[in-house]
Image (tube, rainbow, N blue to C red):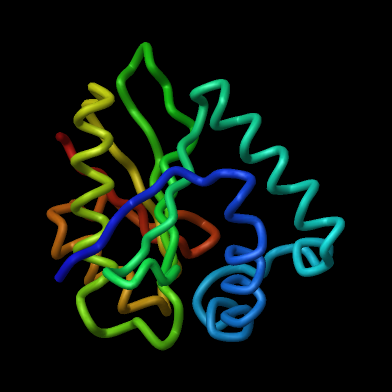
Length: 160
C-alpha cells in the first residue's frame, strides 16, 4: 500500500475543498461538524490561510494523504505542538470511499514517523464514542486509551 503524506500548501485549496465538501455528511456522522463558513469558498479560503500561517509558525502541521495516483484520500493533522514538552495532538480523516481499507492506520503510522523525525516524544488523540473505526485505527497504531471526558470523547496517548 503506497501512500504519501504531503504538507498542506495553498495549491491544495481546490482539491481539499472538494474533498471536505464531498465527505461532509460522512464525517459529520462521526465527528462534530465544521462551521457552515467552512463550506463556503470565501470562508474556506480564510480558514486555509489561518492553517497555513499556523504551519509556517510550526505550531501545527497539516498533511494531505494521497494514494499512488496522487488522489487526495484523507488528512493527517499534528496540532498544538509543544516543542518544550515534545508533544502534539493528532487528528485525521479519511474519505468515505477509502474507509475500511487500512489507509487510515497506514497514514497514521507515517504521521507518527514524521512526529518522531520532528523529535516529538508523545502524541495524544481523541475520538467520539461512536467512532469505532477511529478507535480501531488508534489501537492498531499502539495508542493507549487514557479515559473518557465529560463530553464523551475517548482520549489516547502514544509515546514515540
